[in-house]
Amino acid sequence: MKRRLVYGIGAIILGLGTLVGCGSGSQGATSTAGASSDTSQSTQVEKTTIKFGTCPGPYGDMVKYAIKPSLEEKGYKVEIIEFSDYVQPNLALGKGEVDVNVFQHNVYFENFKKEHQLELTKLINIPTAGLGFYSNKYKDVSEVAEGDTFTVPNDVTNLRRALLEAQKAGLLKIDEAVEVAQFSEKNVLENPLNLKITPVEAAQLPRTLDSADLAAIPGNYALSAGIDLNTAIYKEVLVEDMKNIIAVRTSEVDSKFAKDILEIVESEAFNKVIESSEYQFSGFQKPEWYTTKWGK
Image (cartoon, rainbow, N blue to C red):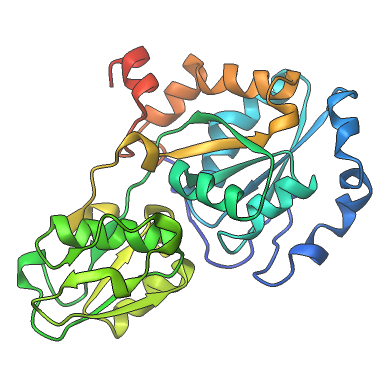
């Protein structure tokens, strides 16, 4: 029987993982505070436990099914810690509360670490579920009408991402010259349908489908809410920088555990899980290194 992956919006505990709430970043990792107080030691002592930070959706499952088994074969203990927003995973990584995170695309990552002055480094791109436009009202994006409510992510990188896709779909026009960090819905230059653009926390976007006419939902949160990615009335085509990444602290990019993760992600075992119909990863958009290596 094929395994059906069920992605929960609420708390999901995988192994010894811990759910960390939106406003509880400093408290949610209390059990690891002692280890995080001196992250410099992590470059001197070989890790036996690796803590992955993820967000709701498929990337925790990608770690659980495509990465964790191979790490355990190498002798590591793996903990998957799920955060409920896009902010805490990078802060936790910077503090040493997790060792690696898997949840974000590279544009968001680069902007966030610059804004928060974090010493973090991308390890590798991974297969990614793209952003889509969803609607309980329409079957095609061409049906979107005058004055419709359009909910979008409220973080600047995904807000710009969503509105850029809306531009490609012919719904509006944005000022592409505005830098990501300064971008807002006010940088829409043309809005011929007078869409009511409403920024919402990304995790809450699926819930807006009951009231909004159109919602731009990142793939991981769509899957978290049980939304079939194939029901999107519009899908983005991801450029490499918009594909998700695995990130570590810069001080540990050359560590043994980071090299082991890299080796596993590039392995045949990882490829078999990603392409298996038993999981929901085969429809994800693949990074360039992956298609070059595996021809898919």
